[in-house]
Length: 292
Length: 256
Picture: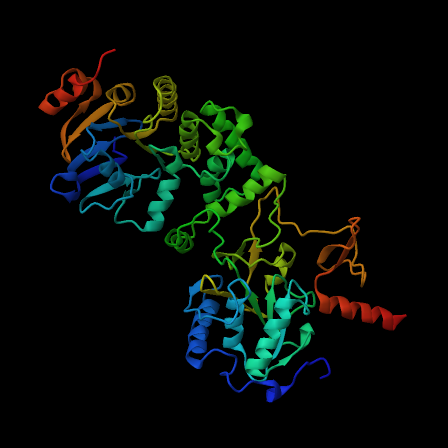
């Protein structure tokens, strides 16, 4: 297909094992992932490896991707929704070099999508795997610094403090001001941090036909949402969960339904709003040009 | 009348005569029990064991809950114990910083127990917060302030409000007036006495201050070197102490 940057093993560097990690490491990651899938939302510790880039740049997500990637997979990597930013480009190139897999920018053609901060606008389908890069996997960390205590709280379903944070938001700002890493209840059991995706993307987690895997490299935790898992964003009865809305449409494609980034385009502070999902935006624009 | 807390042969020792041993008593609803004794006599260890925080090496602590069911605290599951601790029980720490969440507002501190019990209505949480601030004589306008901006006495009162919001039946207090100056102590004691009578709370209060014990407690236990050396009605123990150590303790109080 023309959108693929590379095909097959041609680009692969033979000096590395397939997808960089050794087979035993990948097997241990898969065991952890199987456990994570079996207990949706539960954080599974794993023996994280050093990756050739710093913590915070997606080492957890890359290890998960390496563990699930096969020779026939088609990989898409996004950073804040964009396929062409530094993090996305370098991670994509990393897997082309170490695994020789095909890559794509088109959401529906990808079998594995590694992401930082977004879920694509185009609906995911059965058979696709989303891999999230997670900085802080523990949703209770902000209020409870002790890890043994947070694990006990998870084990005993002791989640009263989660609403303390939302309460503070309303008391301070008059509404729930948490806009990203918005905590969710998974399958009525575990409270989970959905990684720093905007809360706009939270509804896409619920009952998704795709498998969602989360990897935190620094904290060495894996967790997962199997397909069709109920996921509910926490809220109050009199302050229900709300999606953000914009008064503008995308300056490029005119979309009124996608998640928009605010850009300041000159020294006078002129603002523009554009889609954060570059694949969605460029294809939307192309469709409109074709129609004219 | 059945006791709400029955303690039998409770022992937790760190070394010979360090900790508490062979403590027995019954506590009834609405009753205030004071535990007095010198530093290191095992008062706080005993309180830890009674309140489900420190497993005894032998003996049992049985609590009768609001449904009348008897729960052996250390046989019950940890989930059950935690649930009791944040519903029917309260614990007021000596240092309010240990009992409060210092990084969230006063209102959130008060509301936490109700949120843990599943109340998901901001308006009602807010109402309860304002009501309890008034109850403990803190200006309701300070509901959104952090506890760190409160004085020591206010922090202690906030801690009490945070515990009482779930309408507990049993309250544990560890030196609640420690570190407060005398006038603040007096107003806090006054408040506590009022709340205890009004809400019919059973209280176990640890103190080394006999005046606090005299004011709040119906009954007293005097501890020395891990053992209870004397127990009885407060006035009886303080006015006519029988054990040599109790006599020493009572005679040590300075009369201004």
